[in-house]
Amino acid sequence: MVRGINMGALVLAAGKGTRMNSAKPKVLQEVLGEPILAYVYDALEPIFADKIWTIVGHQSELVAKAFPEQNERFLLQEQQLGTGHALQVAWPHLVRAGLTHVLVVSGDIPLINTELLDTFITEMERTNAPLGFISMFLPESGSYGMVLRDNNSVIDIVEAKDYSPAKHGKDTGEINTGVYLLNIAELAPLLPLLSNQNKSGEFYITELISLAVESGLEVTGAQTGDKNLLGVNTPAELIAAEETLRREIVHNWLKRGAPLHFADMLVIGPKVNLDLSAHIYGPCHLLGNTTVEAGAVVENNCFIKDSIIGPGACVRAFSHLERAVLGLNAIAGPYARLRPGARMEEGAKIGNFVEMKKAVLKQGAKVNHLSYIGDAEVGAGANVGAGTITCNYDGVNKYRTEIGDGAFIGSNSALVAPVKIGNNALVAAGSVITKDVPDGSMAFGRAHQKNREKKII
Ligand code: UD1
Ligand code: MG
Image (cartoon, rainbow, N blue to C red; front, top):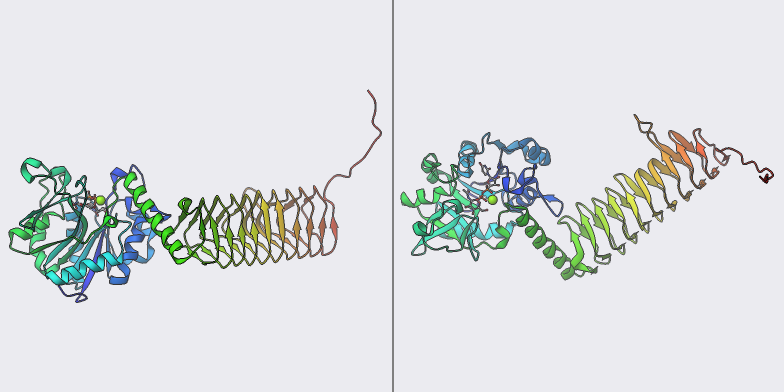
């Protein structure tokens, strides 16, 4: 086996994942906010670049939607008749692509990584066997395929359902991880020989092992696996994998010197980027493409996804952010909600129970209490009083509100969009504003107060 001669990868991702108790295909189940299959691609890409094919079947349209960049090399297994059948479906495509070797990987291994695959490929180069797989040891083989050896040489993999101690001997605890390397020319004659005469009635890829041994081909069972190669088949296994990865990510950030307070209660996704001078306080979730920049602070109980927390900015406790941006020294919360498209410029401030969506707060603007700012722009230095609502939706369409620089919006005002409040304009408290307010003027949009003499009844 020589690395790089023309090696590609095949990901098996057509199965339903019945044991997950979920309508969603197993490979789209999430670990720290990312689908399992994304981890598999991340591990493969450094070695195989775009020479990665994927077998899809169950709800393939959902898998395709989640990975548009991989679609070109998606292969459809219309009926999911087993992992061996999946390989048979892919085979002509792999041959046509001119591959000499293929690394086959189950799409349900979220903790798989490039380093483990590299070690395996190196081991296969050493043994030069036409067929190999990664094995590892567990206290018991459980629901995994169990490796059978004779005098140390691999002779078979027995699937859990087909295992009988009387026939196969005692549980060796050596399991098949579901990662294989195959020489295409040498394995081609064996592929049509796979049968479905087993307890599941499925075509097993693992039957290739006994078929190869019977026809005198060498099989390497590379004992290079660790717990990171465990396939996920049940919710409990998914959660265990997620916890393992969470600890590893938090541990790595701490090791690099990030001040993560109450780190046991932090969930940090694999794509999150932290400046080492930013302080994060657990419990918190930081997921997706989130970046926390120099000197920023994220207080406890925040959920932050796909957001940028700028230098010196502060997300105060119990805030929820998604696709939001906080500029230099901006402050959000406590109890702030920033929905997609919320952007706070330098020194802007939102306080408790303020919701922003597709809205910009320009430099130094403030919305300190109990407001909804949606489809809006709030000018530099403007002050939006407690309880102000941008009424952006008429039941059919959405409209924009523009508030000028230095404007002052009195408390409990309703700004009925589309509407424009001019620079340095003033809106009286309790107003319902339906018409534009010119620069520098004052708008009074409520009934005049009348005081009368109190009658004694
Ligand atoms: C498989 C192995 C088992 C190994 C374990 C490691 C077989 C027969 N058994 O069992 O030896 O210990 O992985 O995790 O291969 N898939 C398809 N098409 C199908 C069926 C499955 O693409 O028709 C895909 C699934 O989406 C999944 C992968 O193949 O990503 C493995 O299938 P799964 O049902 O999880 O096999 P296991 O029972 O885990
Ligand atoms: Mg599995």
